[in-house]
Length: 213
Image (cartoon, rainbow, N blue to C red):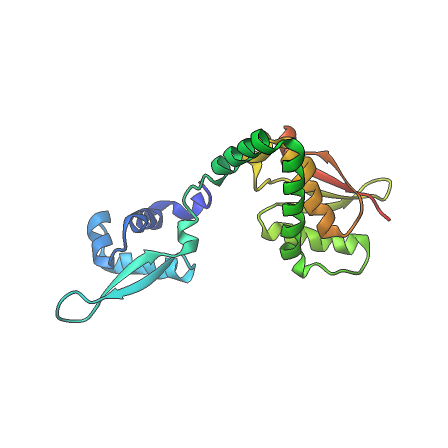
């Protein structure tokens, strides 16, 4: 489960409850068998982390009741299966339009995505500086990327996490050779990037070799 470490213990149980419906601190104390003050303390910590937000609703006479609900960030902690619909759509597109059409579609999508991701990547500077900037941009997306120098002076970008791992395994050429390669090239501003290893093809990591100009 993404962010599973954040769902452990009492706070994890609170998030599970809030995933069903907004709750007051008293509601949670009764359901979880803890003191109401303890429930408030956990809710305060979760609010500080941006996972829950208080809402107020008037119920009859008196002050509005304070209930807590999950934020978008809190909802993202729970499992999502975006890859299932992506894989189904890709299969349908290939069946209807053919592999070449889908390759062009994903290459264009990669370049468009790069335009957004590359906002913090400088357009000038050395190849190594740009590679480091690209690594930081990729890591903001969830990739665990690092750069290194080969014995021949070449620059390599190595990623130990693939944010679309399931789809890359289902469609390795499309996601690795087309989308990922075009994304990396567009971010670097280089004409050539060689994919020498990939998680989608069974590797332990993805490695891009930058062809220096």
